Length: 184
Image (tube, rainbow, N blue to C red; front, side):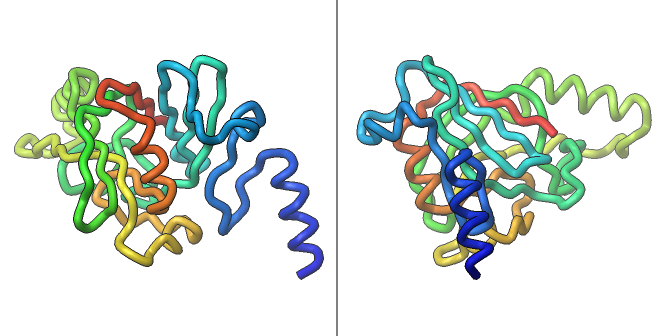
């Protein structure tokens, strides 16, 4: 236990997420947590690191742990594959959600997604009758299931899932039009 506490203390002092932790924030924000990010923000979601990072006009603002759909972490190819799409998107709407706390819909499929989908179809990578899918967003977990994030358990149908406290915080300072880049 003592070694874990030393490791956790070390990790936190250098801004590293550790299992069970939630958010890390840039030091400039630590002194003024109530103000939130400064100016226009954008989000980068790194699937290989299981992280959603927020940047504002001053630079890096916060990083939250997230999980996805399929364990392969592959790019979404078609409806039903449970993969989380990669590319550059925008938040198009926000709402309080009965099951997942908060939901921020992204504009998948967008033009970039449609072009990748058409190319995959033409190369025969996906069936000719496949659909592209939709309804992708950033959301929380079922009530009392934040442990899914702590365990890096991919469970969605292609969305990005966060702890409920984290998604409430993110929801509070994002707006439609916020840029979201998802990469592997």
